[in-house]
Image (cartoon, rainbow, N blue to C red; front, side, top):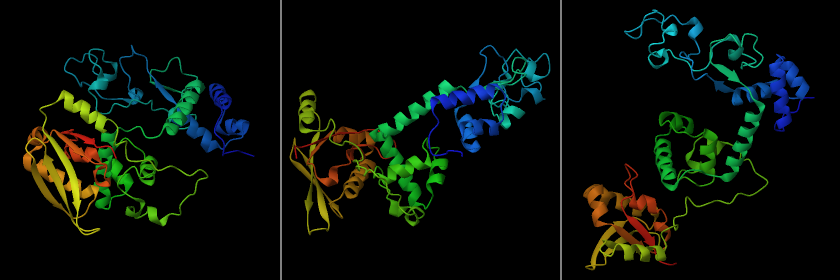
Length: 341
C-alpha cells in the first residue's frame, strides 16, 4: 500500500537519485518506496537543479532546433547558435534557460541516467538527493521562524493588499498584478494571524469556507513591535543628540464616548497648540490627519517641521510607521517616541 502522509526521508531521496541514474521507471520508483507516483514526480520537479558549464558560449535550452541567424552585425557563420563573437543568449528573445528535450519535458524530468549525457550540448537538469534534502530542511526551519518581512515591508504589503481587496480583487489577482514575491497560502496566513489590516470577513470566498481547527492554539502577534527603539529612554537619548530638533507632543481629546474627538499637537518650544477634528479615537483617524498634513506641507517640509513626536501609549498611536512615513514612498520622515505607560 502506498503511503502519502509522511515526508520523504534522506534515505528515500537517495534511493530516488540512484534509481534515476539506473533509468528506472516512475512506477518502479513509487513501488520501491511505497509512495504515490505523483508525489515522486513532484519531489523531482521541485528539487531539480540547472547545471551549465561556465565556458559554454551557448547556454540556450532550444539550441538543437534553433534556426535564428545574423542577430549581430559581426556574425561570420550565419547561424547564431554557433556564433562565438557575441553570446546569442543576450540578444535572442527566444532564449530558454531550461533544456527542451523528451527527458526533461516528461518523466524523468532530469538528465540523470541519460545515455547521451556526455555528448549533449544542452544545459542540464539534475536531481541530487543531498541538495534536495538540504532544501527541505531549510524550508522547514524557515517556516518555523515566522514572518521574515521588516516593519516597512509589512506596511507596504498591507497597503497593496488592502487596496486590492477594496477593489474586490482576489488574493491571487493582487499577487499577480503587483508582482508580489509571496504565495497565496502565506498571504492567507498573514491575514488569519492579524498581521494585516485586511480581515477574513473582507474576503468574499474565505468566509464561506469552514475553519480548519488546529490542535495547538496560535498566539496572535501584534503587527510589529511598535515600542522597539521608541521608548522614553530612547527619546531622552535622541533629545541629547538633537537639542535643536522640532519636537511635538501628540495626544487625543475624547468627546462623547465612542464619538468624535480631537487630535492635538503641542510645539514644546513655543507652546503652539494645533487641533484637528477626528471622527473617532482610532488609528485610522490619526493616520488620516497626519497624511493630510504631509500632503499639504510636502514630505520635505513635514520632515523639517515635525522632526519628532512624543505621545502616550494609547491604542490610536500604535502604528508609528503610518504616522511618520510618507504614504507614497515609505520614507521615514520623523521620529516618534512613547511616554512610559
